[in-house]
Image 1 (cartoon, rainbow over the protein chains, first blue to last red):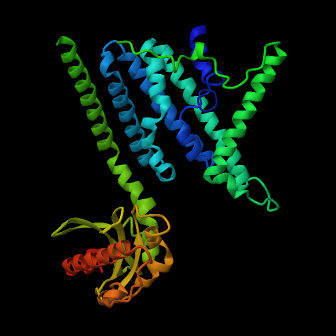
Image 2 (cartoon, one colour; image 1 turned 180 degrees about the vertical axis):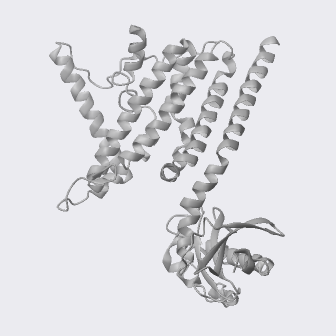
Image 3 (tube, chains in turn red, brown; image 1 turned 180 degrees about the horizontal axis):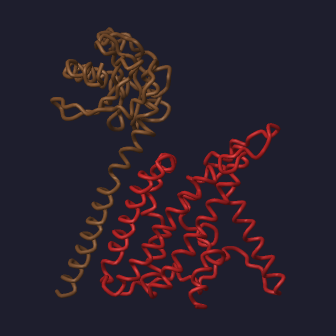
Length: 225
Length: 192
């Protein structure tokens, strides 16, 4: 149970995909014009990531090492097409908004990254917990980024006008450069918070890339051939 | 050898299963997707092309056979009388087919208006075909006069997007041809 919680919760803060792993930035930057778009994209990613982790973990003993990447991609691509069809059928306006970024979930590094680094080496329940955690972390990040951009760019939140007429919308925030600036400031803020946290515990502050490579293992993967 | 066979077998099996799943889901959702497209893509285009009607063209649509396959026709009714029909035709644009909703009066003498449904034209150039400035040129024109001004017609092409302009005009021409095929069946189809 402890292990299960650990794998689930690491996606929420320790390995938070867009901010700590800095993975899957393409949708993070492109679709977060509004909080609603961010949330929709996040939900699609939760669905794909959890099921792809589940399937990859189930098939991990069957898939030959040499063709594993091809297998992972087929699994992810099929799930993405499912999401696309379901979104067209039940949330067409969202589909129109997200457009090309739905099919692009296939090549989102998080999906393949989690399949390769985690699901293909761990039992099913842990893989599902990992996928859910990462997906939820991704969704929260996207929704938060979308909220900030929508609030500053349109003075609204989830399409509701929250700021009054006195507010001059800051259109820069809903353009592409606004996404980079906002993401950068959020990353800086998170790093500052982490360092402050470490200092209060009497640890030394992290300079430069603050990611703990030993526990992550995303880049230290060796093919299991 | 055994390893290679296993690779082929496993990959083929996974691909086959995923194909089967996708086909099933597609089959299950196709009807609903069609409905959604009608509501969100063709519905707004219909509002642009018809100006005076009191029915729901999407709900009253009917399918007709033509020499180039079946086509969905959307009627505009006013006090129960058919005042115009609209259907979607395509012209070859710069980034793929340009879908144009063309409304034609019941007698076929007047093109009541056009609306763009689907296109992948360049934003700022070809995509301006969807803007009112361009679309409104087609309103209440005789089909004979719908041609680009360089060909002696009344339509001013979008500057920098000749291909898209030609595509819309071609689509209208196509629509007029289809209309002539259906001419005799249309007036009675909605019971007036």
